[in-house]
Amino acid sequence: MVISADFDDAPLRAFLDARFGPADHYRLERIAGGQSNPTYFVTHGRRRMVLRKQPSGPLLKGAHAIDREHRVLSALHPAGLPVPRPVLFHDAPQIVGTPFYLMERVEGRVFSEGALPEVPTHERHAVWMGLADALGHLHRVRPDAVGLGDYGRPGSYFERQLSRWARQWQESASDPITELDELAGWLADNLPPDDGAVSLAHGDYRMGNVIFHPTEPRVIAILDWELSTLGHPLADVGFCAMAWHTAPEEYGGILGLDLAAQGLPTEAEFLARYHAANPAAADVLPFHKAFALFRFSVIFVGIADRARQGNASGADAAKVAPLARRFAIRALEVIAGGHPDHPGPTPLA
Image (cartoon, rainbow, N blue to C red; front, side):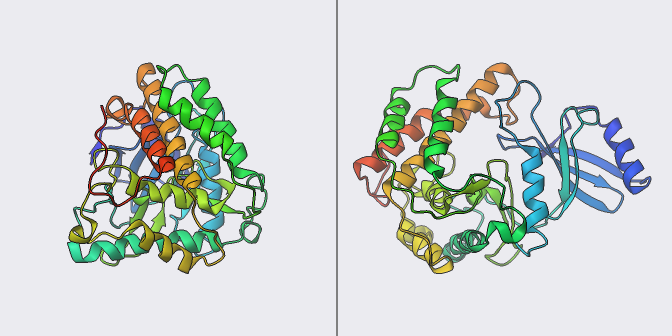
């Protein structure tokens, strides 16, 4: 779904004409959905591109790192990883109001819900396995081999990330969430020892942030790299595991569904497939799943804050904001030992 652009795009067309030569056909459309960096389809002559920019208005320090997204694409695409080909990066705000970059548009399938309602039942298991394969292959890439050896600080990843997201929660103007406070305290008290594992961590790797081949259960483009850094591979795995710990109405999870009847894998099957693609990875612990839910909870807090300021990038920002508390509760369920495949999610107020 696309909607009209929300900025004067005359300077952008002039910029593209100057860069690529005048084009008879030009079109700019904002892509509806998404809660991070505003995204647009750009057609300029025969070029079909995607533009990503920062949201307008005040931003948290280090958030919406457009330059980092472009750098990752520039490193991974020549190495053969499934990412869109970057076209250009422009750091001045005069053209579209913020820094932005352009990448080639990849044609394929995007699934926003873990239940995969658009996919025939007998193909859903393979799609989830494709998601696991792509993540395992990504984590096997050595950052220094693709020019990303200085992309972050190796070691103590969870300690640093927990500090960052806890601070963001503390600095938020949102109403108190006691469950989120309890979760932050548990995570701080239960940090696992640093095992030295380092990979390129995507930071938000999940079904809705990849493009699948038009007909095959194969990831052809990993999107939305704004939270990426050098980190621990199990952070990304924990993020994927959120689907088994959140309900369909909670941002498209699969908790409470009859997985076998729906053709969906169990969490154990997904994790086994990931480990087959990345055999060096350690086992996923409740901490990794709870941490993923915690971070996403704080992301929802940020969406709520931006909605109050009027500059959230998603039209449904006010609707997803209450998920901050829900995800904190789900994390506490993980900590308490709730089974990922139990017959129904706990009702939440």
